[in-house]
Length: 58
Image (cartoon, rainbow, N blue to C red):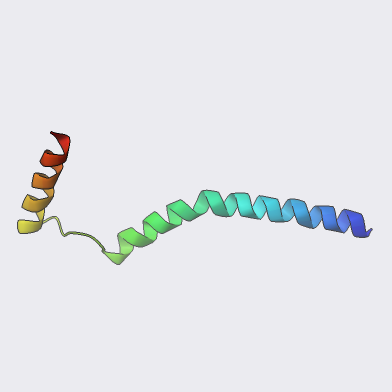
């Protein structure tokens, strides 16, 4: 009984960890998009962004 409970708990923990590793990047991206971090893409911020992108490509 104890060995089957231990093995079931181990499998459940592995499944949970795998799901957490797959979901965490998506959750972090969604959270960062709602937080509004980064350069605003308007006016001078847009000019700076485009300029830096062009310089990095050449």
